[in-house]
Length: 169
Image (cartoon, one colour):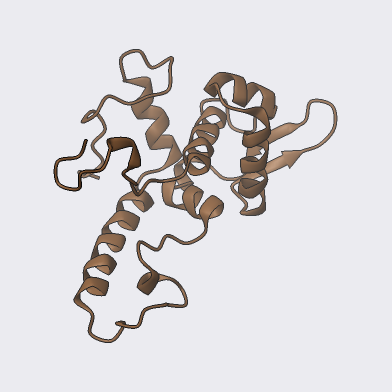
């Protein structure tokens, strides 16, 4: 039970990046680990990352529409990175799948907020959103692949907390 709210922990809502975005990044990392131009079947990516094939296929459709991957049809078909892994930021992956990041209604492309003029919360959320986008925009798929290669037990997805610091970049 949560001490301040009295709610059971499982009832508490958290703000999170969606599984689709997380899986999109993992899928692009799977492509980036291969030599440039290698076409990879979605089944292979799903198997490597232990993710649902149908869900991964939907995610890759979004990534293809946004120009991050290219679909190759026919025998030996699959997906290939459309850009260098060094040019694909985590922010671009998330926004390709989710759309633009907006931490609050007042920060959407068309703001919806009755307190928009002079609201201190809107200013705070804007600052937090800016820092989040700055961090996600600084880290590339290639950066994640390099860092994962240095993690202990890196054959399974997962990160030990505190091991990935991108603040110095």
